[in-house]
Length: 220
Image 1 (cartoon, rainbow, N blue to C red):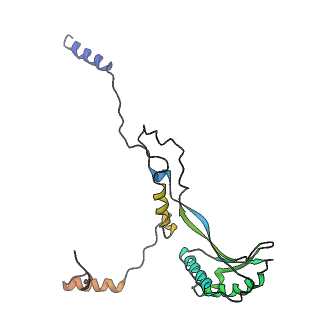
Image 2: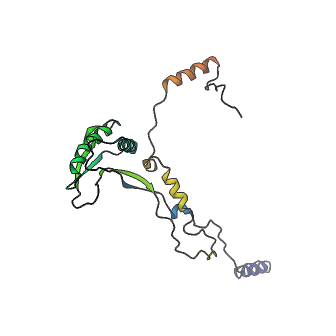
Image 3: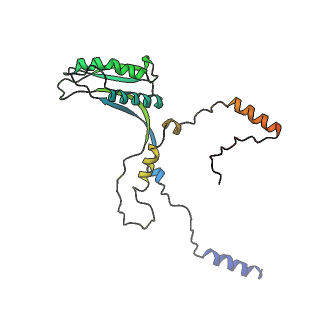
């Protein structure tokens, strides 16, 4: 019994000790969650100015229409709208030019059933009202930058200021060619059967299977 007394005293003393629980972890301050890149629907549009005397689509405007058509095809959108002004002084000129706009779009491999020509009211509009080309597409973007809701001198928690990382996120979102890639992965392309046969034949013969570098290429 006497041998147990020192052990009991140690247990009692241990229970009275002041224990500090220290939790070590990262500070929840990720700019990617504060300025997330989101995918949303938006409208891409371009205005083609038309004056009353226009009888044909100018060379410069044709280039703009063709470039817009290429962007439409790359976006994966279903249809493109050609919106004509009505009730304006240049209404008839816009109608004449619209036929060439449709032909220019078809020249960029856009089928006619994907091009919709529709009017919009331009009654009372001042100046030459344009023909507007538009289509709905998905865009990747973040919220607006330049917000400073907190005191920047308050650094007691060692956190980044609120606007930190916003511009980087916006630049990253602008570089995304197809926002659908953020929603789901693309399908796997089919293999090059001819190249595969060449590689296997070289492997069986004990020859190099890689493509030989040209003489103009520099090896480091």
